[in-house]
Structures are given as C-alpha cells and as structure tokens.
Image (cartoon, rainbow, N blue to C red; front, side, top):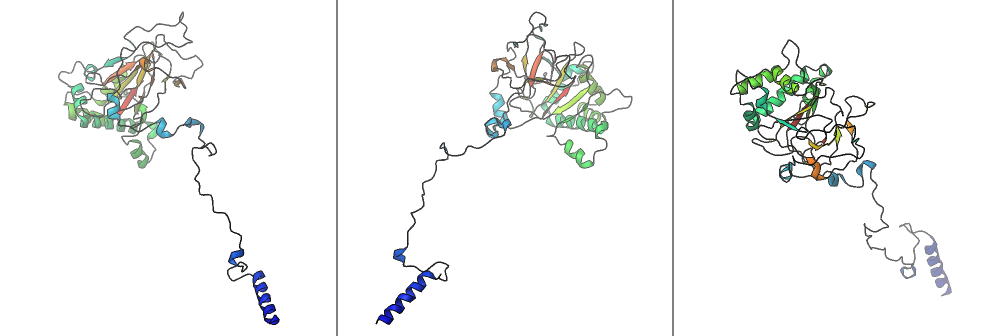
Length: 338
C-alpha cells in the first residue's frame, strides 16, 4: 500500500516539475493563480492624458479643411458684396505730411473690350466675350499657346512638358509685347477672325492694345492665373512691385468668367483702396512683391471688383492699392498685364 502511494506521489511530483507538451508545467487547475481580468475601460481621447497631435508651424493649429474649407464657389460669391464705395485704408506708419493723397475714383478703373478698338464699327467684342464660352476658351487657349511657343525659355521643353503647362487649369507666364515685324500671335489672330469676322484686329494688335493700358515704362510681364478653386482661402495682401515707374504705370487685369452672362465677383483680385500712395523702399528689389504677412483687413475696407459686360478689364496703380487673390474665386482665370 505504501509502495503504491509513494509511486503515485513520485509520479505526481515528477509531472509537476517537468514541462508538458504544451510548454507549461502540468498543474492542478484549482491551484493556478488567476490573473485579474483586463481593464476594458476605454480612454477618452479628449482627456488631458491623451497625447495631442503635433502640427507643422505653417498649419497654425488648424487642419487644412479648417483653413481652406471646401465650398460651392458659385453659391459663395453670390453672398459677397462688391463694396466699390469702401473707405480708404491708412497704415500706422503713413507719412501724412509727405505722402501723396490718392484722388477719389482713381484707385480701380473698369474698362471694356469694346473700348480697345473704337474705330472698328460693329465689332461686338464685349458682347461676344461675355456671352460665348467657346469664344472665351478659344481666345484664352490661343493666347497661351502663342506666348508659350514664342517664349525662348520654353523652346527646348519636351512635348510632354508643353502639354502639361498648357492645361487650362495651369497658370502660365511670359511677355505680352508684340513689336516684331513678323506676326507673333498667329493662333490668336485666327481665333479673332473666326469669331469676330474679317474686320477683327490681329492677335498682336489685341495684345498691344491691352498692354498699352499699362501706361509708360511697363515691365511687359504677362501671366494667366488660375488660382485655388472650390475652397475658401485667407486673403494674402501684397503689392506686385510697390512702384509705378512712370507715374502712370498700371497693372491691368483681363477676367475670364466661369459662365456666360456672368455678373458678379470672384473673377478679379480683391483690393483695399489706400488713402496715401504706398511706395516700396529704395532698397526693395524691383519687381519683387511687397508682402504684408499676417495683415488682417476688416471686411468694410475690401473691394471685390465686379465682372460684367462692359467691365471685362480692371486697372490700378500698384501704389494705390494692396490686393490679394479672392478668398472665394469663381472664374476660369484672370490674365495680368504689367
């Protein structure tokens, strides 16, 4: 009896110290130490113990959706006012004794395409431009192609690069001057003749007519600007140069609306009319923009120039206003001549 009992005890003891095939020592289930159940209480992600997401400095502690929220631009621009009669803005550092006061009514000047060629009877340029989207598209695309193909900086680019740069949602820049004896704007000439008839100006004459509105000593720079669509963006106030080299030198904008018979804002740049001329410092590099970083302007001072038939062009001296891309853009593009 003792031998059986001792054998049984030895077998049990042996099993207790030798690992089983499962990798653990065989133990009586009743003798195992039970672990406490896991804590299944979920943490509140907004609690102070939760780590806060880190953002890059340019995000200013907001998401992209908060900074540039998506929206229906067509509806959004209808809620905005033109505000042509906005009061003039002054800076704290304005030299009120030495600075030149800007005459009323001269800050922003509207111009019609019909006024470019008053000697051509029944041209109907303004009406055709504002009511015929096909004409606007052909006009814009031909201008872009002619300038691209006649700009030395682009001549060695491969065909694929040309195709990308000429996409309608891509901005493009070059020079507007057409003073060579040979016709530069060939495609534009064909478009004008096709849509306006044999009496239409050549493409070169069209470019020079708009460029002449820039006044004396222009830079001859041209750019077709698309900008940000389907988002509201913060204003970024600046001057393109902070100069008016000839005293009458202007920036000229030709707007391309998104739809026919459009009358509204969102095509041209927004502007703030200044009381005193704002001329950049002599040390400032010519043709570099003067940027007013972080400047917040109350809405009462912001002018949103209205596009409509007879107002396809807006002009201003760069020392008379500060301006910005529209916070809500609704356009195909805007062309800037300087």
